[in-house]
Image 1 (cartoon, rainbow, N blue to C red):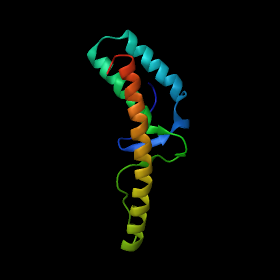
Image 2: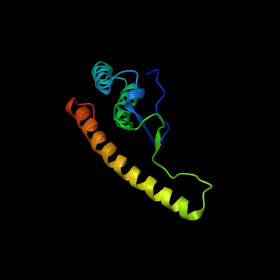
Image 3: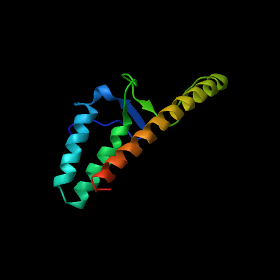
Length: 112
């Protein structure tokens, strides 16, 4: 794919993808069904699972799933970190659910 994926531990808005997730899933599944080289198969499977890192409602700025850096006072920093962790928790549940579904897709076609 000639598209820049979000940085590790970030999630990006699905609108930034060059095609719909469904079209990309179909293309990857097709590629998995015709390619037998282990290295390529592994890369395609990882790419398929990474589709979970693209979600609706993220917006223009990607969301970091790690800690935030800030020069704010300690009280404000604590408030922001807490708010960030709540947001991360919400997104992690969504990502885990979708990754499980994507893995199930791969199991269904016999490549997992």
